[in-house]
Amino acid sequence: MHKPRRRSKYFERFYFEYDGILYLSKRNCCEKLGFEYGSVLGYRRIQKCTFRKALDHFKEIREKSQFVFRNRKWKNLDNCCEFYGLEKDNVRHYQYDYGDTIQEALEKAIKHAQKIKFKYRGKTYPSFAKCCEKMGIPVSTVRKYIAETGKSKAVALTHCIKKAEERKYSNPSPFFYREKEYAMFTECCREFNLEPNKVRQKSVSLNSSLQDALDFFLLDHPVRRKNFLMTIILLNRYPQHAGNMELKELIFTII
Image (cartoon, rainbow, N blue to C red):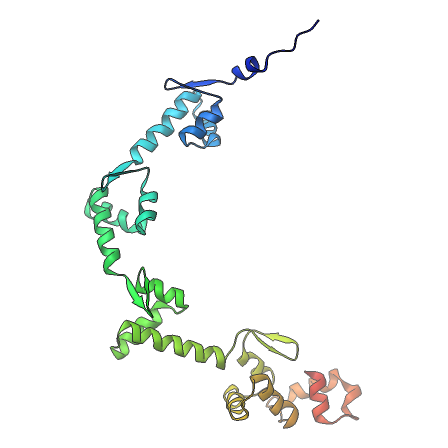
């Protein structure tokens, strides 16, 4: 009678020993050591070396990238910078431009990061530029206002935010009118040969939306188009309405 092969014998074929430790497989070895299995295989294939030689290569790279900072061992600079909230490029700047050791560069970067922190409306940001970015305001715009007026960063940022909100109201983007989408409000006004400022003023005086203000000019008080040729084109497009509809109704149909 045929005896089934023992499963333990089958799995023993995949066992892999490295640095005196027996692993379940080569993949398991990479997982335990923290290496990407595919990367190790790729290096072995390109270099035409053994799997152990490939592992030695990645282990050497990792050991070179490890360092001790503030009594703690770090696997690499990325992990350290993430922990302290630093920009890796800033640390490299001190290393390469000033010849500092990685520990000296990190200390300088941490000191600089503490110095440039910016507090605004009760919240602390990594820097003034990051705060502007979070508020959706270009930092160059705020710095320009500071240079022109001599105001503080907080006052200048508040001013720019207020101006941005006013622009958002006065020229919303995108803008919808009569089920049509425009890139912005001023584009809609140009299509109907209307002056945006007059429409805005009418919106304020009527205490209504910009769409209602457009209706006021286009439907309730139709205006002559500056481009008369456009009127002819529109009438040619709707010849069936030209003789039996009022101008107001014609405009409404066109819109």
